[in-house]
Amino acid sequence: MACPSPAHLNEVAIVSALGIVFYGPRRTDPLLELRLFRSVPFSAAILMAVFALCGFSAFLFVTTLYFQDVRGMSALSAGLCLVPVGALVVVLSPFTGRLVGARGSRIPLVIAGAALALGGGASMWLSPETPLPFVLAVCLLIGIFLGMVNPPITNTAVAGMPGRWPGWPDRWHPPAGKPAPLWTSRSPARSSAQP
Image (tube, rainbow, N blue to C red; front, side, top):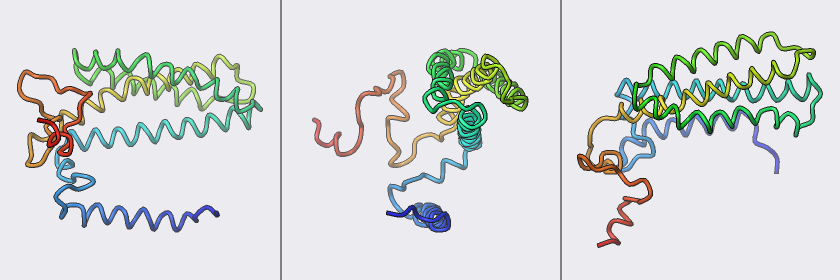
């Protein structure tokens, strides 16, 4: 089967976006609740997430090309050079979540921005002769960026959600003083089947 052309994919994306914007709000249970975007903190968090993911995607694409085409590494070696990025995300995200809970989102976002600026600036000087430890240090800076940016974005998005709406899942707003259990489903199908 042939891959669809980019023009066809663009058409599908446009029709899908129009469906979400014009048809979705008429539904009782829309795919994307557009009223959420009236909240400035929620919209800002979504915008930050889009930019962070675009930056990370560009980093992965360009770095993989750099390792394989410029440095002549195999795909396995290039992948192993990117492991520290994922390791830092795994290690830093819980720490950052605790930091956001204790001090707020500002400190992690400043650290993430500084790491991204330093990593992006240092990557402009990469060449085929650049020592591998320097290249890995750039990857570590991007890993610090990713590990520090995700928890504040999530916290800001959830904090920016409006209060209860009719039909809004209770798992977002548990009763006062009681944490929401993350391991249970509160969907209508399961709650009606349970006593």
